[in-house]
Length: 263
Image (cartoon, rainbow, N blue to C red; front, side, top):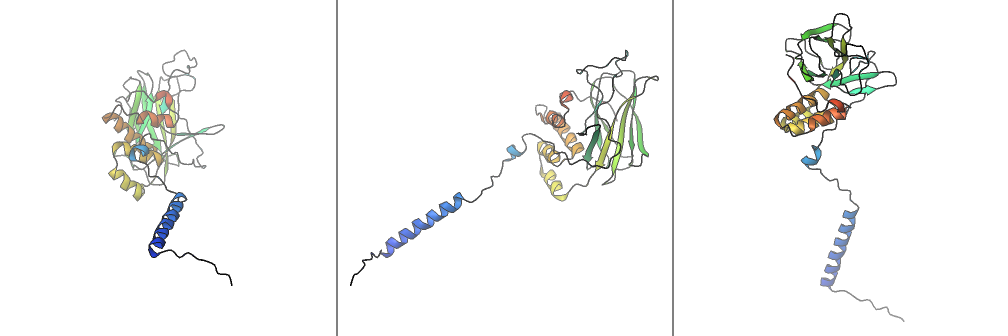
């Protein structure tokens, strides 16, 4: 009869082997476990990238972000402007389509602030018009321009009708160069949405720069622009304002000054 010799490990030896085996299994398991790195605040808020929401397909009057056509107020000879000359421009996102462009931005405010770049125009009159989706004018006001080229802001006053959540409104900004010429104008749409509770809580705890990024990544244009303008005022060295404009293709006016204009 053949006997097989079996080595029996001591209890202490068995314990050591068990510990080593457990450690090896744990290391292998960790190597196959996906770990999601948590970015730091500096990584999240280094540069605002505007996350434009999908465009609606039921707007029949798309609009135009840049006004003036082939001539502006300063061009009395009716000659085409050069590519280097800046024209009246609305600071708002635009969606490009083959034969038209949709000008649209979101807001959470009942009385938002609108922004425009106004070129070097003097001795002109201007006005701002806001209409509902049915084309009825709900607000209109004359605008006094200083004649200094730059970016101006125009806030809807508290005395005007509040924008309703879920509704779109059509705005116009017109500059009347003279009585013989049609106005130079820009026009587009604004829609008010409700601020969700999670984002609201984040905004309440955010720094000025974090507010810019939170609004931008949520696709809320008008509040992100106001937040970046405020950041530019208190910290001029930050480039968030310029990055916001560049994010929607407004590179040519990203470095233009903000000038006093309108009430």
